[in-house]
Length: 252
Image 1 (cartoon, helix red, strand yellow):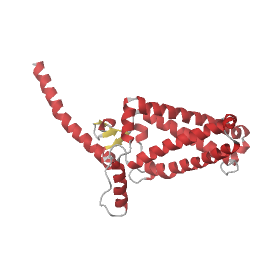
Image 2 (tube, helix red, strand yellow):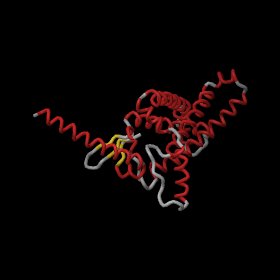
Image 3 (cartoon, one colour):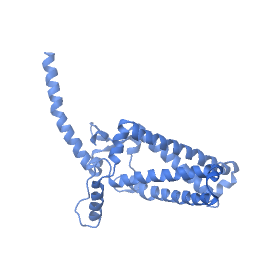
Image 4 (cartoon, rainbow, N blue to C red):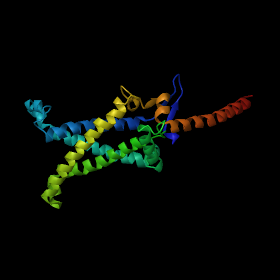
């Protein structure tokens, strides 16, 4: 598990948690998601106060549908690439394994509930991903699948109607709308809290900018992985000393 995080030794030890590839995926997801939310709700609620000013700019008002489809295509393309990355690359497979639900996650959940009710003195310690991060990730996957399928059915409505009755389109429209609301609220309430308003990271968690977290953050958020990294480094230190000693002997 500790292979996923790289230690950077300098004046202040930092830990590289996210690769450049993963950070790019995150920001492509963020931009496409924001565009989908703004254009999607703009199409659904054209009389909303924040949409009405666009009516004075006809070309921009009419662009909502095109932007929504372009953002949707980017979102779907990213989803396909993400599946490839997680299953076909070495690091991706390691992340997939780290995301795998375990009984330990259930115990951590119970432990955390007990801690929040004052029944435990300390919160649970986590490895590379906490049960909360796993839940958020799988919620994203579930939402992406639902939004992708329903979005394509609505995009190609004529094709959909050749296979299904009209009421299916009406049902898909409702599912697409309420899943959009659910996804938006999950990001605004859940994700934004953990990366912005959480007192432990306020004013913002910058790990998706430079990929790094501090040693203090590592110990606090992922103590079990931090502990494993310390043990690995302690085991490697004698090996490095032996290698240096052998090199000195050979150089004589």
